[in-house]
Amino acid sequence: MKFTKKAAFAVSLAVLCGCVPFASVPAVKEPLSLTAQAANYTEYTDGDLTYYLYADYAVVGKCDTSATVAKISAEVQGLPVTAIGSRAFEYCKNLVSVTIPDSVTAIGKEAFTNCSSLTKFTFPDGVTEISYGVLSGCSALVSVTIPETVTTIDDMAFHGCKVLPSIVIPEGCVEIKGTNSSTYGGTFGACTSLSSVSLPSTLVNIGYQAFHGCSNLTKIEIPENVETIGNSAFLGCTKLKSITLP
Image (tube, rainbow, N blue to C red; front, side, top):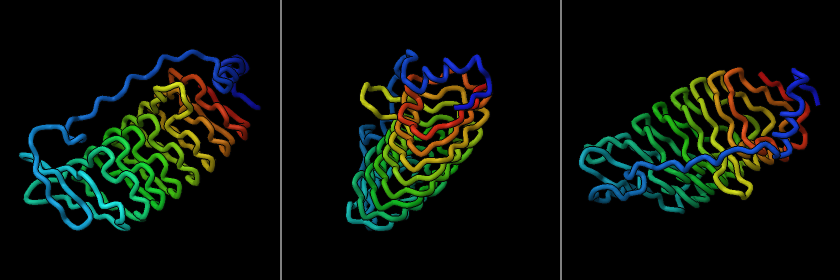
């Protein structure tokens, strides 16, 4: 294993082996609108999608689990569609394609978890946080596009995307959050085909178990601004040959 600085050798081994203590990351508190527990709302169904209509905006609340294609409207019943609710597409195992308009600026936790036929996903411009477990278990996912508006990627976001070959995290992102539990998780945990990761110069924190089990990752370059690398961040990266530290 090659390192850019000899002084970093011990630190890197500790991170890889999971021996550096790291405080757990507090859970993200979601906007109530994403959990459908805000003020009173009415339901409106259009095809396979059900929208929750609030006073001045609408949220995608749920999708029929038999749906194969989903096209989210930018506006329903005269209201802008601004969010996708938590678990709205959970276990839509036949879903192969989803189109999200730029009116959507928030996507709830586990919104697309276990959509095992979904192959491509593009986060709309305006989304600032990729939520907990949003694409976890999307085992056919081969392409993800993240906009430069994203500043935070939460725990488990891509966990188990086992055929995802590469990821580019854009400039502007400052944190890849770690798991909050003692069980093996991590933002990119068990992405066993992930061989290429591009980290932005703006990145400050790489969380606990962030890349745990990425067994096809061969090298990683840590940007200059990174201040914290969480415990077990690269645990189980059995093909990792090169780490560049700032």
